[in-house]
Length: 226
Figure (tube, rainbow, N blue to C red):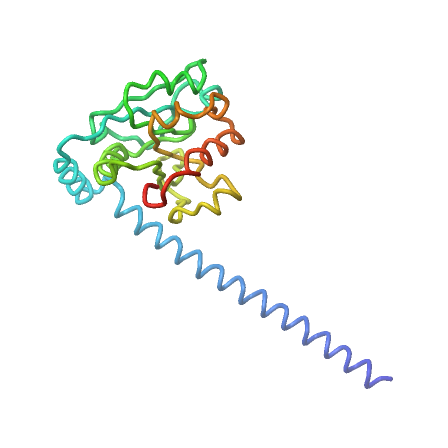
């Protein structure tokens, strides 16, 4: 009996030691992954941040290469919960001049879309902001794909001091993923004519109808046009 009890105690001690080592290794692996992700974030931001002079020069050269930048209307979504767009890291003028913001200001989202004077509509949540070079990137993408059906963008967060963090880098177009979750919750660029062709009840901004709107806009679109 004594030997059996000692064996049980040793077995329990070994099991606890193995569990502790397993937890330690998991924490070490998590720290390594987090460090790798932070390094990738810093690299992505450095290559994307227009406050970086080489990036700004490259963006200006790309903008100069655009012969006729598309005019862009930015329609704010969910504006009932925000009195005005809040852009915590919109620094300086946008690189593309042919754009303007339409804030429903108590009107409906559908009315804002109908009031937009341009064919290219950028739908932006009211609690989001645009990078200074975002309109230029959209104009460039429109020039490259003039028959596009829908565009979407990567996004990240900005702290109160303007420090960017937590980037959300979207995958390539995935119709099955969209059918299971509304993963395109940030900036989406569409055509005004496509929006107006939808039923009135689909042109709304709350989360459920927004998902329905995305599905309607993409269900007949060719993959190459998204």
